Amino acid sequence: MIETPIPLQISFIVITVLAVFGLYRATRSYIVLGASLAIMGLTAALSLVGFYLQPDAMPPRLPFVVLPSLLGIMWLLFSPKGKAILDNVQLSTLTYIHTVRVPVELTILALFMHGLMPESMSFEGRNFDILSGLTAPFIAYVGYIKNRLGNGLLIAWNIVCLILVLQVLVTGLFSAPSVMQQLHFDQPNVAVLIFPYVWLPAVVVPIVILAHIVALRDLFRSSKG
Image 1 (tube, one colour):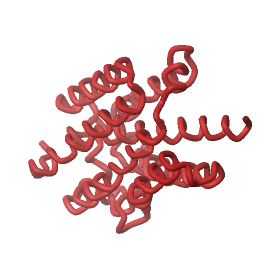
Image 2: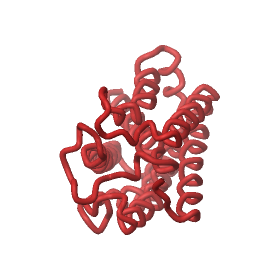
Image 3: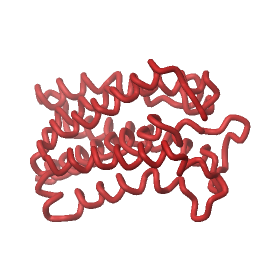
């Protein structure tokens, strides 16, 4: 049994709930909320029974961490109902969601110090994603609420921050114990396979990625118009 301090577990549960609530506030969709809660429940249950902690299993268990959210994102982006939901998203609220990346990075640092994540995934290593969370309130307020930033700057911010989170996601997936592991065998990314930190790749990171994709979708549309 892999254990971490109870306060750290509780804080990450709160972080995940806040991210899901922010997505619901931005989309105002009970479908999105229900799907998010279902993914939380499914991945939590599988992690608690040790489904993901089978590094030699075939097929690899790791992809099943991100698959439910990936399918949800694809449905939102390409189905008529999903597109209708995204067409009415509040981009300022969606952008404020990125502030959760600050406590997420503090959690990652704590998990590194407990030997459950590699140093490169923390901001003491090669992870600069905390900058996205620190700048998000400014972008949300000045860029969307006050409308004082041009589309070009908003597009650039979303692209840079999307690259930062994707870099962390890829590092995390290839550092986790599985047949897919390519990095950090000395201190692998065990945390994402256990509860509640499984919600980082299963829920929080997909919400962050979706927020950037939706913002870019809207920004490119308005630029063409």
